[in-house]
Length: 96
Image (tube, rainbow, N blue to C red; front, side, top):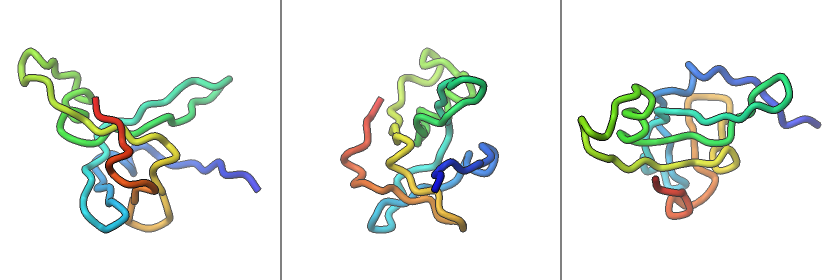
């Protein structure tokens, strides 16, 4: 069975991501992808105000450097329905 699934980015941006114990980890503000052949595959999601500034291409000179959480593609469950949930403890997420 294939695990590939089509998800539209506009359906993810701005959505809350919950931890395994239902706390808010942040909102998806940016998505990273890599080109694979003729298509792109998501490699990670960025959460937090620093990610929003990156998406809007606002420089750190104006607003200062803000941290963002980096969620690998396999650390996020995009189940059908409104809830996005981490598949790992929040402490395992990379910070940039």
